[in-house]
Image (cartoon, rainbow, N blue to C red; front, side, top):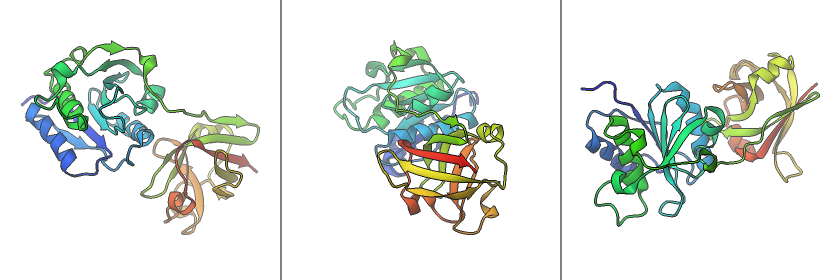
Length: 283
């Protein structure tokens, strides 16, 4: 057994079921020694932004050389590119080029990107089907790459990294006593609302645990905030009463809002993306 083969990590918006099982089967057909892991198959349907932020959360915690297969593909079968990106940390992402690479391009960097050559890297006898590239292109090509059957250069032809499709990302700002940023991620399981404001900003602005700040979360174009209130900055949930809001440091080391033992995203109908902004004012 070759223990140097890369791990395969999958995420989709399919739900864990027949489609994912089929993709895993294809990988195993390519190479029975491959180790295949799940990230999440509960990405919101067609949500390429959530696919992008999900990858950004996990990539740092897998070894260099890992092959990530991400299939959130509302444009399946159209002219959108099916690609493999080589990250500057040495790992690979096999995905539609549809915004899924946004956060990795911004933070880690993409060294090179190649279109999957369907003549050599598509599962045989699937050419008449145009709606399951997760199985026929991404799983098949990703498995060949992870197993060493093909080199990265044999994926297909390279194209300009500047042509990669990306979502808009709004940078955070510090203006006097006001810090603004975008909602980078809204976790729908626990309702955590993570901004793109690094914890170092709070350190520089001398905002310490126990301090209260005024927090406003608003969707662009809306006059009335979705959430507004005086909120303490705390180490963790248990420093406020159940149902009360707090700010804390997220696992990605950004400033995050939450309710103790309640779902903040659900309660206030909060979402992620460039349309959603958070403002934090020192008192």
